[in-house]
Length: 227
Ligand code: DX5
Ligand code: ZN
Image 1 (cartoon, rainbow, N blue to C red):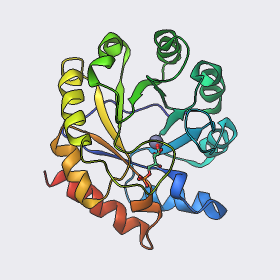
Image 2: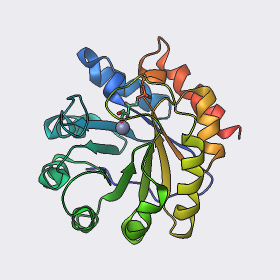
Image 3: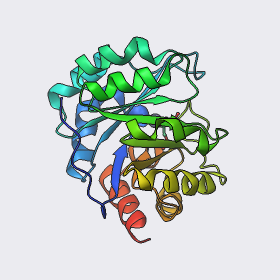
Image 4: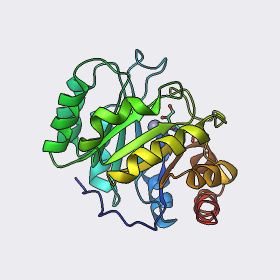
């Protein structure tokens, strides 16, 4: 397991999502984003219940742990996250983010992540009020704001996300929590997200879906920094 870095205030973190990677040559695709300066690798886990899609499991994280040089930022879009915390910790996740809309005892699940020394993340869907995060702020290292309805890569950034990011950023600031945005990030929307207070950006289609993966990543990073 690679530990998450100490947070640098001025830095923008880019986390390419392998949901849009060419899985027939995943190791090479990961190398390309690492060479281009990716900060974390974003791994979307979907169970077909919390979202209408299926993706990966702990086995992929375990395999990637042998080859990646950057932290694995694991996003659990699953109905019962508590069941999967231990397997993902064992597999080598660096950060584990669960959804506030999931089932079970959210606080206990977050505590389990925190206790294991991973970065502890909580995500909200587009229609969830930012204020619902308040009872959990003391436990969080990151808040993941979904700027699309979760489930699929390649969707468009929802315009109302700008306001939600700003509200979340206000809450996060006092507790030194990093705000990450996920969904529809490209050169244009990266600026909107960082302008509203995001410090980490997930991008799938706009990086792995491009012919020149390295250039795509650099362009997004530069656009985000231009704010
Ligand atoms: C969506 C996932 C995202 C997805 C983002 O449910 O959580 O991480 O990979 O993909 P893009 O950047 O293509 O919207
Ligand atoms: Zn994600």
